[in-house]
Image (cartoon, rainbow, N blue to C red; front, side):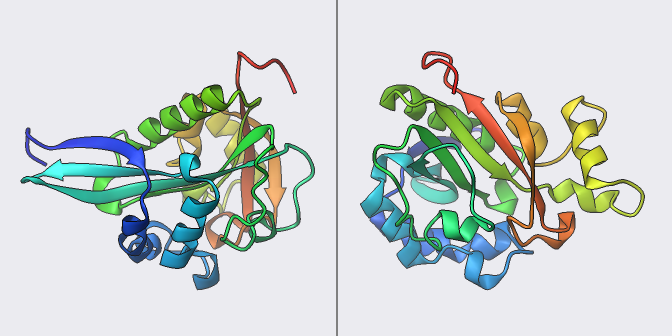
Length: 214
């Protein structure tokens, strides 16, 4: 990147769909093909809940390049289905509840070449602002644990999460989420397909301080 490069967060547009779908595999190399968003999935997200979809653009050399995106929907906080694909309408967001009291953060895809530049933080800020603007009770996410594979031979996933929470270890996904104000509610077993963490992920919650407790 040059000193003249800059990022901007915008609502995702229909014309971004093909480009965003093209780097899903780069962002999530361990997920099954059926779990990855297609261009038509992105178009469905925009039609159903346009204000909840964000894209990061890099302005460089006189043009905008798509480098990251995040997908959300409205839902109620309660018992989750056995697998996240059922919760998100098998990638279509057909299960979005326009009256849902919570924002559900489904996906955050950052192109590998642009990680470590604060884009996740920018997305979390945009989502927090959306929660406040809509008067929602907060946001919850099911977070992957990509760093666990480094220690899985000598540490349980439960201990790994506990170490990350208290700052003894760092995880590429969980650590930024904690820094953004999320708290671990519990672990979800079999909710995702991710061999790096034995199909375990975290359920995290970030309440809107202006909306009271759930």
